[in-house]
Image (cartoon, rainbow, N blue to C red; front, top):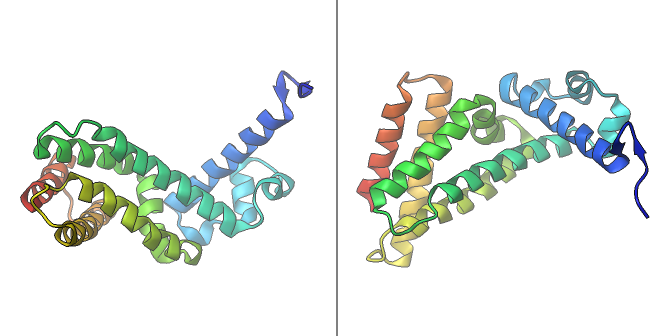
Amino acid sequence: MTEKTWAGTTLSDRRAARRAQLLDAGLDLLGTTGSAAVTVRAVCRHAKLTERYFYENFADREELVVAVYEQVATQAHQALVDAVPDTGRDPAQRAEAAVSAFVELILDDPRKGRVLLLAPVTEPALSARGVALLPAFAGLVREQLPERMDALEKQLTAIGLVGALTHLFTASLSGTPELPRERLVAHCVGLLVRSS
């Protein structure tokens, strides 16, 4: 049985569109004004939807915040995976591709950078999520490290690099120090290459 349509769209399509509107509003508020600005009422006003539609998609504000964070985290992870599909390239090329992809994601849309890197520090609903995400990113770095390193050295190096890179990206988002994108990418690539 096919779904009924209204104005050319199905109920499922309309629900998906409203969910996307709410997620976009959550990203905008969380990524610009910060977690205190993310209330159910503010998100609905920003999305131009009623609270009825909010609760059709999310149990509460925290569930929306987590969904926004996970959407950005998935985009960041996928950007890194897509950037380094060919392990045949030399380490410097792989590092540059990965860093450039990540910097593009978080600086071209700073809201995403703030959600990914800053919101877990200020938003209680995200603190555990931020910590849980680190091993996935460390795993991506670890895969790029040379075979001559033993497993523990690879793990420790990857964790250290993710920590250093996170702090560099966070500083870049806050504008301290001010540095051109090319300089940020070059510095991060240098860290990765020297560690391998």
